[in-house]
Image (cartoon, rainbow, N blue to C red; front, side, top):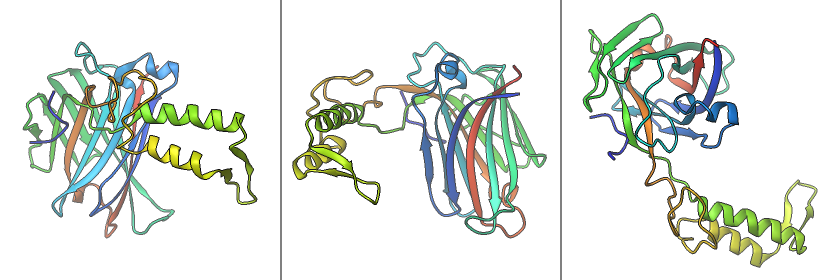
Length: 249
C-alpha cells in the first residue's frame, strides 16, 4: 500500500499543533469501545505541516488497521478545527472549521469555513482542486504512517509491573518521580527504543519482532492542502489544529 502523501455528536478526537514553519502530529490508536465500533469515525492520527511558505497541509487518518473493505461513512463529518492566534497561549483564537463529507469513496465535499469549497472525486493521488486553486484534497486508503514499537512498549509495561512487585521501583520522590534502579532503567530504555527488536512476546498487530508494529497496517486518509490565507486571521501566524469526527446521532 502506498504511503500517505499528497502528489451532532463527536465520536473521535485527535489533536495537533502547528507553528507555520513546523510539522506536528498527534496519535490516538486505542479508543473506547463506542468509537472503535465505528472504525470510519475512529481517528488514528491528525497531522499538520507546511508545503513551502503559503500552503498548510492537513491530514487525518481513520479506520486503524483498515482491512481493505471499509469505505468513508456518509453519516460522518470529518472536521479539522484550525485555531488562528497571534502568539502561543493567546486567548483570542479564531476558529476555522475545515469540514469534509462523503456520499461514497469517490464523492467528497469540503468547506474551509465560508471562504472556499471543493467537491468531486478525491481518490486520484493528485487530488481535486477548488475553483480558485486554494484548496486541494485527496482521500483514500494508504499505509499507516504512524511509527509505534508496540512490542517494546508492551514488554516495558510488563517489566515495570515486575519491577514494582520485586521492589526495584519504589515510592515516588517529593518531585513525583518514582525511584528506578539503574538496571531497570537501562532495560526500559532498551525496550522503548527502535533498536529493541528482541521482544519477549509478539503483540498484535506486530509480526514477530517488528520494531514498527504499524508498518503493515493500512488506514483511510483525508489529506488537504489549504492556502494559509484561508486559515490565518489578520496578521496571526500561529495555527493550532485538532480533528474530530461527528455524526447526527
